[in-house]
Image 1 (cartoon, rainbow, N blue to C red):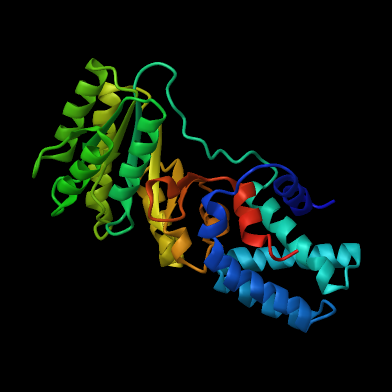
Image 2: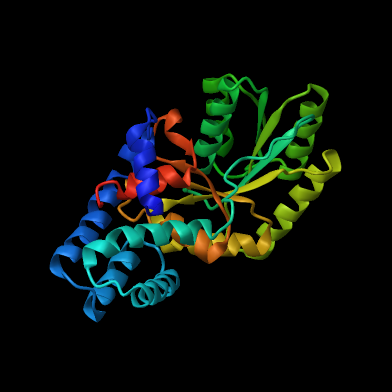
Length: 322
């Protein structure tokens, strides 16, 4: 039994809900999976034309050109090695190999690392317009509902409306927000962390400016922020999460590469995955950047921001294929 068959049996036989993964991946499933199904109908037997069309389908799903070429080469080797001729047989193998490519024989660490004692700091970075502040608000609400004492720090102090936006999320979730309009971000963060330590907060979520046009300035700002955080809590930030808008496709991958050059990213938050038919970007992120996806946005409600689960993702994406 293949890996996907095991996942399918698991979700099919047990009372386990896919949650928002089912509805959230509907656009990608409808576009991507239908094309894969039609490919098997068009080509009864596997040949060069089949692989050429498969490459195009995978690239259009935003898996990324380099990743696709590498993947198809691996697939061709397996077809030759196992003497696979029937395209229907290959459908499930394609899903299995995509799963293996993401896991890469290792354990994907999609969990957030919290301090057992003391304050956990989650630092959020990303360009403007990707839904960073909204993501922070949703995660704060989620953590508050889990019983954690949560603080938000408005480190994006100069963008018009940024402080007001995070204040609104604080009011909605009844979470403390530390802010100061037009102040140096590092100074606001210093004050917030001091309060968090004194008042024994569990988790602090820090918003930052989303300017990527001048990488030198952003690098200097993030470096200063990190120094301030470490001056208050030596092993923080425990997580630096990059927020990417899934609908921007390969542009999001470029953003990730740029941010990886200037700061230590520990995880990706992929927003608006429900709004794109190119959900293969999850696979491209892992293969091209080597950073795990930790949260995915699968809708507009607070509850639609989910901890990333590779098995739910693979099943939600391909459940109609085989």
